[in-house]
Image (tube, rainbow, N blue to C red; front, side, top):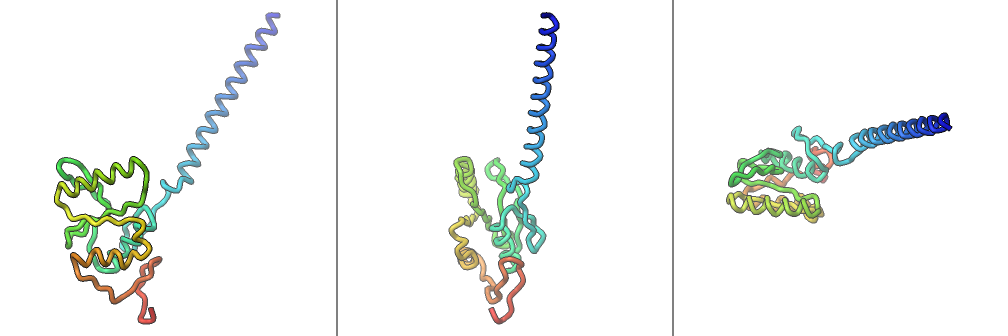
Length: 169
């Protein structure tokens, strides 16, 4: 009888050890694959001017600035009324901040409202770009910027690679 209890306890300890080991292995594998294959953590795109952006929409916007010879900074921090803002773009020659609102969700929308409020409070020029504007982003962005600067729109550029089209286009 005592031998049976020992075998029972030993079997229980072995089962628990195997369960913990398998659980640990699956946890490590899940962590590894979520980091390696998570599209949000792995997504980055290199613009013509060398900026590394987070989405294809940001790539198009950044390349637009480059192709139209608009000096721009990407993702830097500024302080407005003691609070930090990480802006998407700043156009120093025009003194305009550009924000691309590409996500949705309760937390994101709260942060969006807070950033817009801070821009207004700091009396900073802000141009907001929404996803709906990408139906014709070149015309929409051009129209928004012409309030501040005359743009050279005679040359058209490829949205994928950024090369200038010749006279056929």
